[in-house]
Image (cartoon, rainbow, N blue to C red; front, side, top):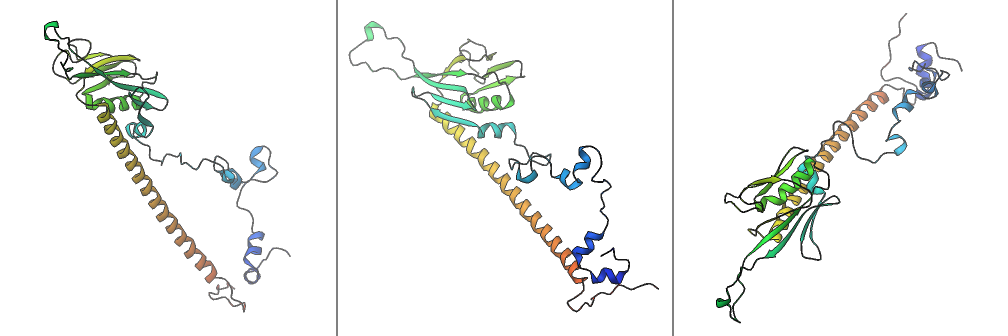
Length: 263
């Protein structure tokens, strides 16, 4: 059957047959030279990580909201006590901070020694800091969050970090009266036990839970937006189908909205 030449013939044809007879809108021919001529524009659109069901299912476009370095780092942080009962704060594969107790017993004069003399209470914390060679915003954020209960913080640029103390009394950090010292991987400092390692762990656990809740809320908003968008698109498609079906001939061949013919 040749191409229909009149409107009456087009109305008598099925919709799929009518579409087949129309000229393709693509300007390329299948015999064009080169890779572009071997596939249509629709095939090119399906190339990429999402073609044929490929892809990791994670949006990587510009519209994707990225987490702040602090929240991202908290979600990748572990806090636990090792076999030596030392608190370990681990970011990815690097133990950025180790906190351990060190009891300090001041010397007792021989004249004051008795068999029943109790050991005076007191102690300090020994901190081991390490960036693992990754002096990034994430590493600094985790160190600062863990050191916050101890009134310590890390400052400086990527090439030069410094460990600063918020203590106002001199001698609170191992380098004497200085309140600032260069940051070095593997450095150890001794600070007063103003908080326990358990308190540091609880502080980090609370911050990590808050970051996780923020991420869950963000994902929930994204899912809600996606559901609303899909619902809207479904309504648009449904309205389009109704318009197409309403303009097609019925079973008797009668057109509900006849097209006026010229001439």
